[in-house]
Amino acid sequence: MNKLFLSFFVFTGCFLNAQINIEKRADFKNLYDSCGLTGIFAVYDSKNDKYIVYNEEAFNKQYTPASTFKICNSMIGLETGVISDEDYVIKWDSVKRPVPAWNSDHDLKTAFRNSTVWYYQELARRVGAEKMKFWLDKTSYGNADTTGGVDRFWLTGGLKISPAQQIEFLKKLHDNDLPFTQKSMDVVKKIMLAEETKEYTLRAKTGWGTEGNTDIGWYVGYVETKNNVYYFVNCIFTDDQKNKFFAKARKEIAMEILKRLGAVL
Image (cartoon, rainbow, N blue to C red; front, side, top):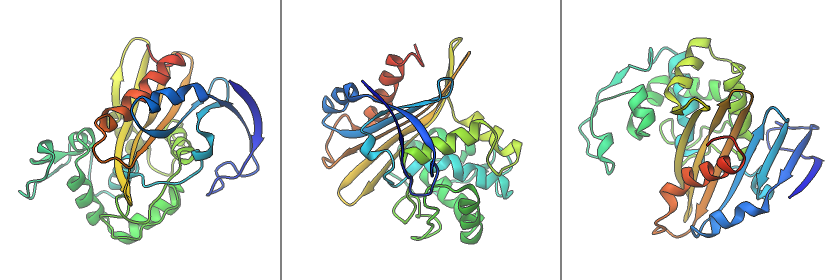
């Protein structure tokens, strides 16, 4: 492994003129190779104030956030009063979609858990394009580009975010440092809960989008232990639409690396 200090620029200036500690980990490459994938993994170890990164060249490149945007989208819906809490139901429009779990009424917590696209599209339409743009600018979410339609900009439109920016957003959420009310942030932290043990609590979200012929998969979140918080992002890529490992690899690669780092057991 290679430890170094360096200064570099992120697209939105998240680390502008900031000196950060990066530990490069080329040994994670075999996890991606074994699945026929390429990818970038990064974790911020808050106790030791350092980033551990595989494929640093992709750390600051921006990609479609896909369903990881549901973290921000949920808070915007709550903050604007479009939805009141995690139990807020939006009725299914009776249009059958390819994911069976989507074909029913959903509240915020089930829509988040099942990554129900239509629920969040309807939420965004109710918020409206002007307010959506306002909140993306206010939170400095990715490149804050809402072109492509109020219900499509995070899927096939202009919104892009880098792994570095994902981690910064998660850090602000954990620290209650986003421009939302405490209630909005607390509700989202609650629905992000993926696993809870005596040793750690994991809050996370998957995402799956496309850019051209490339599938892009995400697993982002943070792990709270008794004496540390690890913020992580796994972003994977493939041009093979038939890659059988893609869906599971988003989470499985991330969890394996977090185990190697001692963040989870």
